[in-house]
Figure 1 (tube, rainbow, N blue to C red):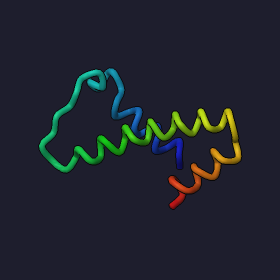
Figure 2: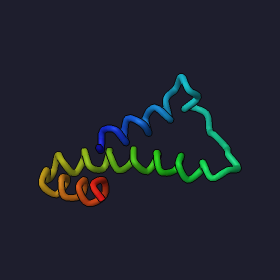
Figure 3: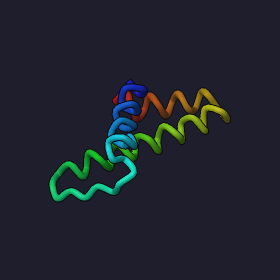
Length: 67
């Protein structure tokens, strides 16, 4: 599940789809874009934590992504 969410967030921010440009929206889609950015940050943090303590990384992953 984590990989699916991270891949979707990466696709939304892909360079060929204008990911290098700042998007400004006046709709509720802003929350979805922010959630994608949060997922990418969470993924990076989990990868860093996994290098230090794999068990705790797995606990955090299950807590945030399996709920």
